[in-house]
Length: 230
Image 1 (tube, rainbow, N blue to C red):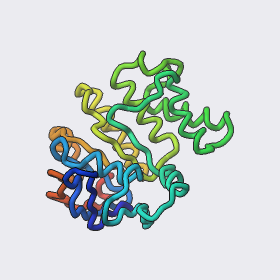
Image 2: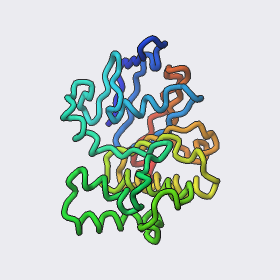
Image 3: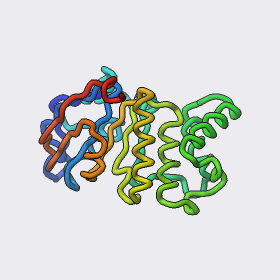
Image 4: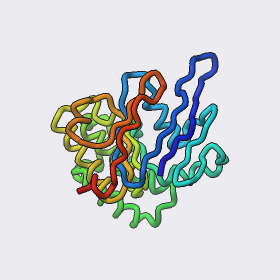
């Protein structure tokens, strides 16, 4: 599903951000990326959805080498990937409903009525149906995270990427967010979560890929997706 082959990334005038990274993530797997700040977790996520391109090596998504994709091809790849950013990236002048609906509107996700049904369905799953008319600044951190998740999942992506999704949440909200990831994974979505929260990782019992100083320290044990979901 996701493959990195001998991948290097170097920023201009800086040391390499990633060095000789090779590993794969199977379809339907749930994987944690972990390591200290600056290890390369966010950079790897950005490579998966094509926001960055490697200096050398290959990134394959569903067998497609994204390093060879044109600027016009990348948006079609991104339609299959949901992303939850560390700072949420919600539109502050839009309502909860509008923040989620924009994903489908940009992608041509059907009629206005169809989009409305899909948005309300995912917001109910997130427990946010009563807050659809509120703007992000009127929501708690946990509520904003749920909206960001709803936006990432509303188009039923093949892959869900999350960058430190529980960083500023209390234990109750952390568990609720992790349950949402688990449910998406059970439905067949490949989930990749970047985090340095050891407790979260230990409680989840999923494969762990460890990075340090831009290098792959441990690719973890590849789990059978069907067994993982049981």
